[in-house]
Structure formats: structure tokens, C-alpha cells
Image 1 (tube, rainbow, N blue to C red):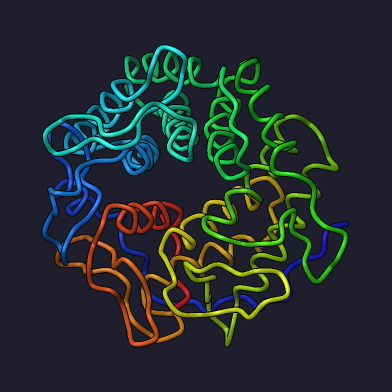
Image 2: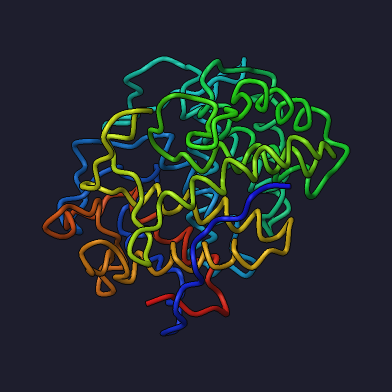
Length: 350
């Protein structure tokens, strides 16, 4: 049996805000989503990237009753991804403001996230033509394989979305199965039950991919391994009764753990993984984990600072020892929206 996290339940509190789309609209033009912002002002000189556009397609596709504005965003993001994809299923990642690609098609993290977005759109979009076009692009991309565990984990999340809606989808099942092999098995050491010697970014996505594979492919040992990974990951990121996620520098096994420069992407990945575990197991500890992730954005963190601006709808790019980095880029804003999507009908821990 998988050990449960040793954390206590979060305190009940104020209502969870609705996912805000105002800043995402500000960051998006008729081509795609700009990557960076100075405070809330778009920095066009940095252009667009497939990574963020794919995450945009994930969150817009999760909306069951999207507004016309959110629907427009989803259309824009799908068009960007299909333009970024080559005939073999790989994707370009960076497009300049002059609409010229500045890299070649590849199978980096952006390929994995593109499949995550496409799989989510194909499974969840309320618009039939978006589902159809996303499925075509997903199937083309799912013929590829990447060597990096995180890249495969992101792709696996898209495959899992498709399998939930279409259990007979063979390309999705094969991709999800192969992702488990690339991610690897948890270590037997209870002090570090992780497949790798370093934790870097979006760590919970790996655990979520393994959990989803174990459940959807009916492999109980794989499900248990994923829950063991997530149990430890959640446990080590709770300090003084609140969430304290690993910083952008990561954490090397046997090395010191830093706490400054925490990134919203870590919180969003953890919220997604806990929500998946909660759905599969029904265990309250995972629902509590989701609430802690929401509460992190609302100020229940290491420096008691709110991590988004309700006036703009943007999330701050990082949490330093002295407070938030006030820039409101795409990645952080998407992390806020993604996390708050899990909070409908719930209250935060703050």
C-alpha cells in the first residue's frame, strides 16, 4: 500500500476566484500568445513559443462552457500549433514577432506540451471541429518519441486525456505506455523515492503521467508507483502548514535545498497531479493538496504574499525571499488559470 502524505488538512477559508482570462487575452493577438511581459505590458520583442500556446490550449479546452472570448483563444492556439507542426509530427517552438520561425522542428518539451494541448482539445473541447482537427494533429505527433522523461510526461498527459474520452485510441495508449518506461521506476530509498537524482521543474507532471498510465492501462503496480512518487513530492513541499514548492534551481539528491525563486508552474503541476489522484482514489488528502496549491496563489506561501494581480488577471512570475517578481508572463498566468480551474465550488486554505 502506498503511504499517504503526513501533512495535515489545510484550513478552510475564503472563496476561490474564478479563473481570470483578462491577461491571457492581453497576451494574445491573432497569431499566438506572447511569452513575456514587463509587469502587465506585453514584450513583443520576445515573440511567441509553442510551449505557452500549448498550455493555453489546455486551459481553454478545459472550460466546459467557454465564453466567445475563450473560444477565440482556443481557435488561435490550435491554429498556431498546427502551423508549428511538420509532416513527421515534430514541432517548432519559437516564432518571432515578424512571424518567422527561428528554430527547426524538434522533440523537446514543446513537442510534449503540444501533444498535451492537442490531446486535451481533442477530448474536451465543446466545439466539434476543434476536437476533430486537434485529433488529427495529435495522432501525427503521437507517432514520435522523445528521450527526455519530462517531455514524454507532458505528451502522456495529452494521451491520458484522449484515453479517458476514447479508451480504444491505440496511438494514445502506446504513447502513454512508452512514457512510463522513459520516466522510470521510483527508487527503493524511502528518503528519495524518485526515478532520478535531481528534481527540476514541473516535477509533479511525471508522477501524474505514471498515475494516469497505471489507471487507464489497468496496471495497479504502475498506479501504486505514481502515487508513491506524488505522496513524497507533496510531503516534501509542505512547510509550516503551507505549500513551499521547489525553486527554479531544483534540488539535487544529497545536496542543499533552496527555497527562493519559487515558480507558479510548480504549483500548477502539483495541482493537476493531486486533482488526478483525487479523482482516481477518492482520497481526501489529494483534494487537500489541490486546495493548498490554490492557497499558494492567494497568499498562503513562504512570505504571505498574493501571487496574482486581480486588476490585470495576471500571475506574478516568481516568489523570491522578498516577495513576488511583479512581471506577469504567459507561463505564470497560465499556471494561475490552470490551478484555479480545480477550485470551482471549493474554498482556499488561506
